[in-house]
Amino acid sequence: MSNELTVYEPKEIIPFQVDEFKNYPRISDIEDCIKETVVGQDELIRGVATSLYNAHYMGIKCVDFIMGGSGTGKTMTMEAFCKEMGLVYTIENATQYTQEGYVGESVDKMLVNLCKKAGGDYKKAEEGMLIIDEIGKKTSKARGNTDGRDVSGEGVIDSLLPILSGAPMNIKVYNKEIQFETKDLKIFLLDACSGIEKVREKRTGEKSFGFKVPTKKSDKILSPEKSIYIKDDLIEYGFTPEFVGRITKLHVTNPIENDTLIRIQQNSKNSTFKMYEKGLANMGIKLVTYKGYFREVAEATLNYGTGARELANTTNYVFGKLMYEIYNSEGQINVVELREGITKDNSNFGLY
Image (cartoon, rainbow, N blue to C red; front, side, top):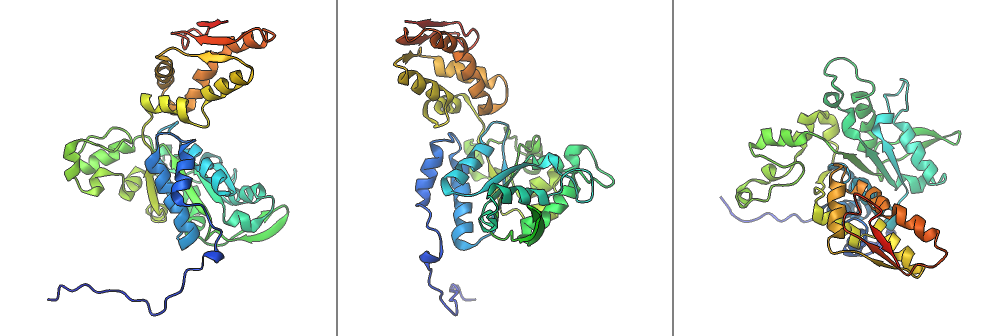
């Protein structure tokens, strides 16, 4: 038996014509730009960026599934990519849709909404992004339905299959019938998939912690299939094999922890704290915090169990009373001092 490797040589080499494509920035530049908004999800950002660039330059169909708990940045990440890359997008909640022919919206409406977001520029919509949230709510197991026709659940999943496959769809937009090409459409499916960690535990025999991939030294000897979520987990969770077979890549968000929430407050472009800090500075007011401020806000936020989504609400509570006093001061305040315990009592501040 020969140990020589067989080298594949294409019959015809087609030169790569950059001019045929819209040139995106270097992928690492996009990655760094997204990280300025989305903090603590570096693996997700790199994975999504690679999928989008593969779709754009290689013509590889993009149907990615993002799993992660509430408030871990799934939707924010996708919105940030669309804005930075100039992609038209629509975010659709799967729970609003039913199988065609039944009461409720059919999945065709998702494409109609995308076309409207593009202002009727159908070509731009066809190359845009369809983000479908709460897709896990459409599994029969999630709905507690194991028998009979589930038009609000798996019927929707079945109706999505042509779109996921890249088939042309006949839709009506602004009273005009058009054929919408989905082959270049980027599709991202989002869900918390609550309880899927139990599916993985059953498969691997290893205890996991939510969506956090185990990092114990002993895990290094595990096969990749035991270290991450795989498509079989989605099928066991309740998605149909036909649906799962059309998913090109799985992504898992990191859990939101204290240190992540602290970094979001201090570094994210969307940081509500930084908005207040900048706004006060523009009014000539210096904002002074105590040493443990950011950690106290992080801990107060985590108590709600909704991840980073609650961070803005906690920060708005902190600044609630003091901003009223500032707006009522007629420019007589130069310094705002936040004091310990302000997340529990937002009157714990000083104005000078």
